[in-house]
Length: 279
Image 1 (cartoon, helix red, strand yellow):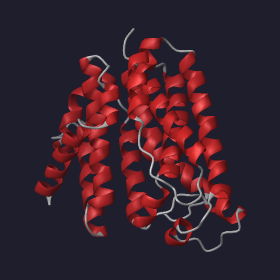
Image 2 (cartoon, helix red, strand yellow; image 1 turned 45 degrees about the vertical axis):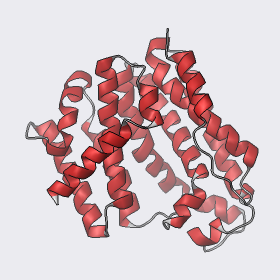
Image 3 (cartoon, one colour; image 1 turned 120 degrees about the horizontal axis):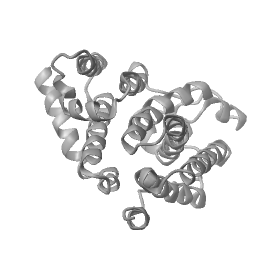
Image 4 (tube, helix red, strand yellow; image 1 turned 180 degrees about the horizontal axis):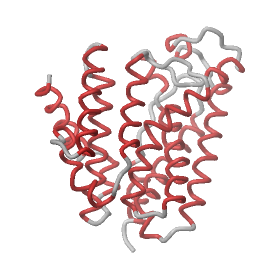
């Protein structure tokens, strides 16, 4: 089991280097870039366990292996799977609970595929799988603690809600539905299942309120970044601009069938890097 998990972690590191996220982080000084790479590799590894790690007991065991590794990282033992985080932890003093929150978020998917959660559960999920990553990241970026936590809260939720709205059909194919129960009920959809909702001709009534919610989080995140030194917000600003481009494509496309797939616009990412990649 350990060898399989180690191999998965190494695979996550290799794929992380090819991601748009890694290209956005490449603008950072080496120590910060390496730290962000290790954070992202950790996130990819635990996400892969939740999505591709076999049956439920196998997935639970994989996530528990990462919990033990994170605990060892902080308790002074051999960090094993988390060995790549040893140096970044010394440099940036990450909070243990943020790593564990990410694992807890992945376990929400493992315990029972999420289907039409209530708004509070969805917000908790977004906090664990996105804003907790933000709280780790803002320590690397160097933002003051209060502003950094607020930025992680809003930008994390903006990005995750955008992902949820983009991936409705993809998530339905693996038995998941992240659209909140309250939105579905308000649109007259009772007893929702992923297949039933994905097959509906028009989901605007369900999705547009969530799209507006994401917009509000983008706006609050942008206001926080506008008040910070440019060198501290270059990387999160690039992510905000790239995902903002996805948000605009979703708003223009709407949520009626066919919902043509939307990917990260390469031009938008390139322009964002050009704007914020250099002083």
